[in-house]
Image (cartoon, rainbow, N blue to C red; front, side, top):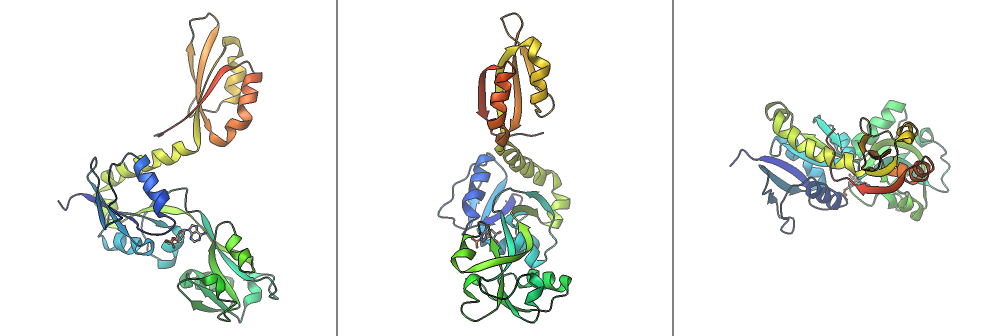
Length: 286
Ligand code: AMP
């Protein structure tokens, strides 16, 4: 069947584990046989192709796959103009300019006339060109952070998440090039011709992402405290209010930001709520 949709995902590296978790959480049933090239999804007309993170874009661009998951930094680097359906909220990092701690460079512009090593040469060139800073970009494919120590370059442009790798290598940041995270992209033709099918996948994936940072909160309260409690509860639209068997009491259900729960519970309690329950949400389709 050539009709099945194909989704290209990374087979190695740091995006693999969160990507597989997302797809399983979205409800797709498939087995990864040691990440062999293709996994057949049992409950959807979809095949998952496991390829190198950097090859995902080529697979999607060529139409070998209809959809792909990769890093935004790699999309920027290839310059491929693929429709970007959704930012996925993991694989977050920054592409940053860094120099050795003891180097006499305080700002990006101070690197003018020097060499900058990077695995993102196109993005780096674009960045320095736009700022009118003439540097010599030295393309290398890995271990970018050791380039200054090896005498290959005076500065680097590299991916940073916590900054600990830079610190370990005696480097400090002097500027940001771009912010990246994992993204869902599509083939332009598939985006046009198979729109509804792509949207189905995107909706399932989006439902998981939307649910991840929200919680379902339930509580009982005296009905006359409702206005006060409603003020504290944003919910998706408005909170659900259900009368209880006991006269004058209601149950209130609402959806709140996961990071708000901590501050919210004591305030709800103080506003008359009791029997507060906080539950995880699996999926939200707004
Ligand atoms: P890989 O080299 O296969 O592990 O995948 C690298 C991709 O993971 C990058 O292109 C980024 O999109 C993403 N990523 C997220 N955080 C980092 C980080 N701290 N260092 C490198 N890559 C990162």
